Length: 356
Image (cartoon, rainbow, N blue to C red; front, side, top):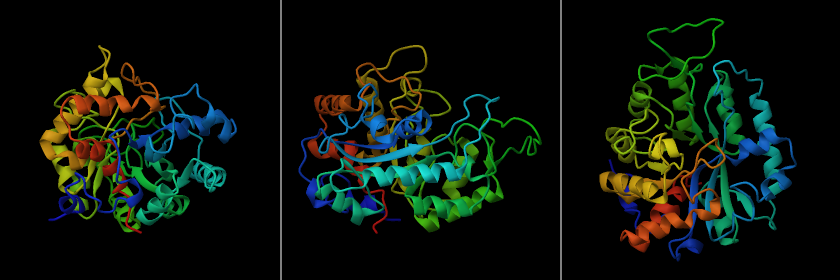
């Protein structure tokens, strides 16, 4: 099947890439998974103050038009502790999205929401940074598929259907029912429930990107089969397991499956996904991941998905959004052409939004 990226070849093409951003020097960046919204949601501070605060990796000083093109602003309400409770509702998140857009979607602001390629074009031509919302984990839907429509209306254009724990959209064949018990982690044997299959269908219908980061083997395979190449699959913040053998990373076969749909893998800056937990990662480890996936499936299927402010340990020297140019510098030193650097660092992310 020919995909958008097959036709585009991704290197130097202007297909579905706004004319205003074609000439670049290899320093601009798009981000497939930026978690700054979690801090803003949980901190209780005024949004404008929270984003302007330069103590944090992601701030309005760091997010400069020209250096940043497009960002998927992702929010998830995680349960990192099995005993942790969650009293955040979908209504809370949707209200937060609405307040964020009211604050930042003006002609004099640095950021502007883009629902599709047409709006992306307008935003970038105006000299601003485009963003869309993403939801990390489908657990806040509570099994209610109608929530997908509400999220789409609020500006969500990508949903990571899994986070760390099972929810109504998954089931464990070894223990399918756990009444009044804590949630179980996702395992390789975890599969999609019937509601999960319906969720995938509704997301495809609404043109919401399916983010397969955090999925494990059986559920990943089920998503690939059910999707059947109808929409590009995205791993917004995942790395190659061949270089760092942890369950959160992707097998080469999974990387190929994503690429076959015309999808994209966003290289994540979380140290344990780059080198494991025992050593400090560097920019060279990040570019090693880019090298591996590029050599495996081509530059058309590689992007950056930082997971900044997502409780991550960043590589040495890559602690702030302003540091991301070092990735392009290392790629240049390794012989990546300008067209390849631009494709990986920002162009490939732009093409993921629907055409409008």
